[in-house]
Length: 242
Image 1: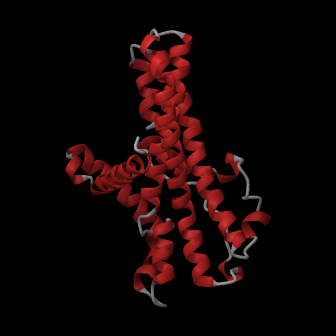
Image 2 (image 1 turned 45 degrees about the vertical axis):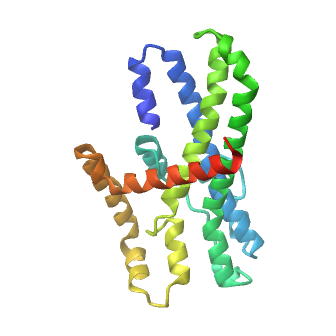
Image 3 (image 1 turned 30 degrees about the vertical axis):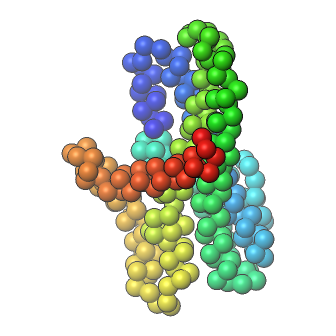
C-alpha cells in the first residue's frame, strides 16, 4: 500500500494530495503495529509475566517494535507484522488463560482502535459537512481536511487488516498461538509450524500474491483478508450507525 502511494506520487495530477495520503498512512500504520504489540506485552504483564516490561517493550516507541521484513510486507502488500513481544508463559499465574488472553490481546486492540476511529470518522463527517461543501480543492484547508479524513480511514483499514492477518493459524501469528494453546500435547501441526511456519507464511504470501496477478479469484489469502475486513467494517458500521 505504501509503495503504491509512493509510486502514485510520481504520476498523479494532484501530487500534493497523494503526499498528504502518505503522511496520513505512516502514523496510521505505526499506531496499528505499536498498539498491537503493546497490548500483547501489557496483557502478559497483567497475567504475571514481566518479560516484556524488563525488555523495554511496554513502550509507544515504534523503534522498539520495528521488524524489517514485517514492515516491508506492510509497505509492499498491505499486511505484515512487528517484532513479537517476548513473553515467558511459565510466569503466567494461569498458563492456559494467560496464553489465550495474550494471543487475543493484539487483535482485540486492533478492533477497538478501528471502532474508535470509525466513531471519530462519523463525527468528523457530521462536523465538517458544511465546511467541505464550500471548500475549494487545492487550498491549504482542503489538504488539512483531507489529511484527517485519510488518517481515520487508514487507521480503520490497517487495524482491520492487521487483525485479520494475525488470526491466520500459522507461526508466528496470533492465530497459531491460539491453536497451540488449545491443541493436545505433541500436536503434529504445532510441531511442523515451529520448524517451518515462518517459511510457510512467507511462501503463502508470495504464492497467493503471484496468483493474484493472474486472477484475483486465485488469491485465496487476499480473498480471506478482504472478507474479514469487510465483515468487521460492516460490524463497526452497524455498532456506530456510521
